[in-house]
Image 1 (spheres, rainbow, N blue to C red):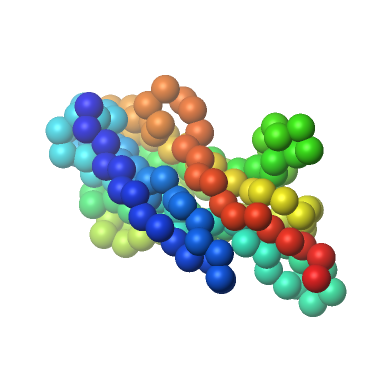
Image 2 (cartoon, rainbow, N blue to C red; image 1 turned 45 degrees about the vertical axis):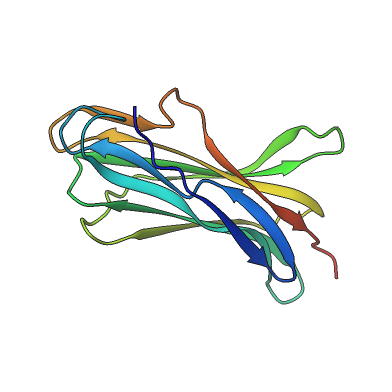
Length: 158
């Protein structure tokens, strides 16, 4: 199976954060599902979790994208914001599902945010599933695990 994984370094403000991966492939145009032949779609993180000011309160926001070279029959993306608690465990804070099939050749941005801002480390995770044009089901990651990326430490109170 062949998956596109790119390692790149992103700088957020003055802090450097290592992001593992960037664009993940799904929906094979050959109809063979994830990992088969010419992959028709990808998904990735455009913005790791960061604080946004809402005028008196703060929120945590992240953005992912999906992109398909050809029309899919069905395309569903589950996106979640996770917070690392005091015991170093990850707690899901907010989840959205977007069932919009991306327009071929055009990236679809999917923002997620929550006003449950807490100081600490945050992640954005996503899981993509659907049906290709050829009628084959696909999902990414392959075994039903959420794709996740480590964000930076967030400071909500200023």
